[in-house]
Length: 274
Image 1 (tube, rainbow, N blue to C red):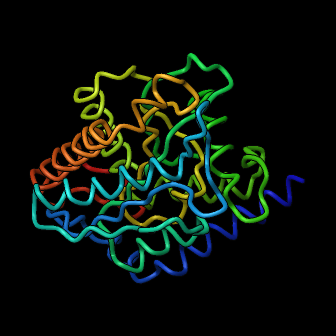
Image 2 (image 1 turned 90 degrees about the horizontal axis):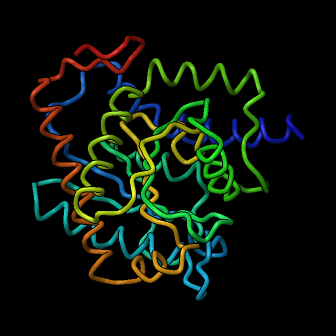
């Protein structure tokens, strides 16, 4: 079973990496001081509904609505090209999502999701960036659920695989790990400040959808659809707009950080220079 998970995860990695080979060349130089292309990834879609709320609201519906609003919010703030991995209710394999970002030479990749837990009182916002080691058991659980969207995978990634560990340790050193951490922090802070939701922290976990990204990449869990009150909140057009605006403000903050650094952040084989 462990070998099966390893093969499935490696397949996601290589699909993303090979498609983004040209974009990876960009990563060997300093980051541009402008964010020009952003890919927004509405989680799930098609037969993959994602989590479901007590009243039947599906994660895939919420993520697409927030993502569409986010496109507009970003374009209102600065001149950039914003692309979506999906614009309708269709299933997109996880590896194809970052491959799409790589092939379009995206500067940022933001995957939108909503959370769920057996405990219906669970609530709040979590923001993730890629790492082999999960921050805590909750982060491991969330990654396992989201990774189950991979073709042929019914549960999470095994963290006991030496092959996977080598790959992700290499990614941490060569693929915008520092920048992903910073992007996660500023988006998370912005969403909390705008929405007033409970702070569940910025965390690390082995999300398949983030593997292979050659740009700063994060996954935002904007609330718990399993919580009746948060399900209602997430279903509100007004609050979806508030979430989108907050994420856009976080992106603006990150853009300003990158601009100030003037390209001194290395993302290939070296730790970031502060």
